[in-house]
Length: 425
Image 1 (spheres, rainbow, N blue to C red):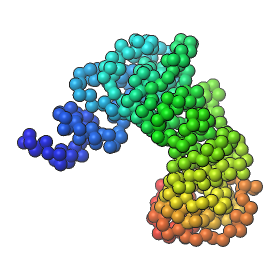
Image 2 (cartoon, rainbow, N blue to C red; image 1 turned 180 degrees about the horizontal axis):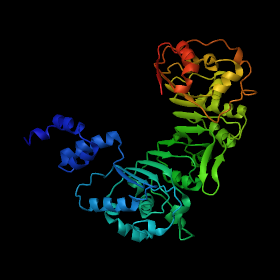
Image 3 (cartoon, one colour; image 1 turned 60 degrees about the vertical axis):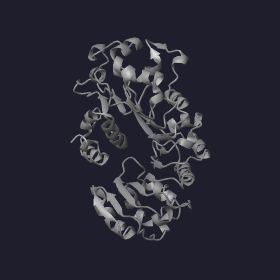
Image 4 (cartoon, helix red, strand yellow; image 1 turned 120 degrees about the horizontal axis):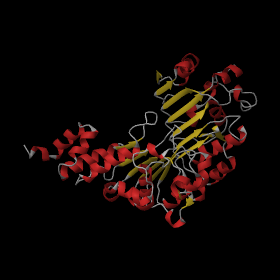
């Protein structure tokens, strides 16, 4: 019987049917089980260690979970989390900064290491997802990992991180020598909007070996990418305004920094995903300058762009320009505004030549757009309304639309994409 469970084919079949929590257990049986179980964990990129804060319930605090994890690791010889993902999520939406909320309060660096000795000495983290403000010692240990033991990290996803929380200690700025992250082996970096630009620049400066920069990268964050000469690694870009919640002020709108976008265009990025959304009030630029940048980004990325998400007006504008074919684009998401068609008394999507621009398009998604320009006066490019109904695109296999758009778009979708299956969300 023991020999049966050492046959790779049988082992793989058994492990393929195990829950992920069970994979952690069987990985500790022996070397062979460990190798096959961990390979499955790697292949699925599952976030296996999640230290999160259930904000509104005020329970399961990150520091408590981290302490539990530390105790568990201290008892393991073969640590199943080594090289896997550690996620720290310490977002707190309630206004409670009192220190007695946390399980273990001292945030001095040496004390934090003593609180989690096994994590600090035994755990090797390969994938790290950070979303915390370091009010909690659980976040402090993540900071120290990035500063002193980050050489093992290959994938870094920074969802929320404040520079003042990383480099300030009791209102004193940490010495510059302590600020250098050790992220030389990071291959994939995922960043999100509204990151502290100085901190982002520090991260990018220490991750010069990065191969891909993904995430919700807006014009605000691109300035740091440009500063560190990493435009060639940028794979996703959001050409739209961003919003940030600031306590005491509410939602603060950050418009598109068009000068930064023009500098990005001059660097000829090769994007895999491009998101564009124009709002007259919030975009901070004219429709002409916005569309010039959008068109130039599509043109520079025409041989590698795979996913395009834009609003209806942006699609109208780029279809009126002779851009090169984006042959690798297989999916388009369009934010549709009923008011534009009602305003012009034209079904504008029927005049967009999808086949010429995106010959290998397979999936089209229409969603109800909010906040984009709906008054078409002065925004529809000259001559567009006189375009004939465009040719059909037989390569599209799937069209998805939201329920409110069903009556408005069903007929035009059937005529433009005759071979597509239509699903309603």
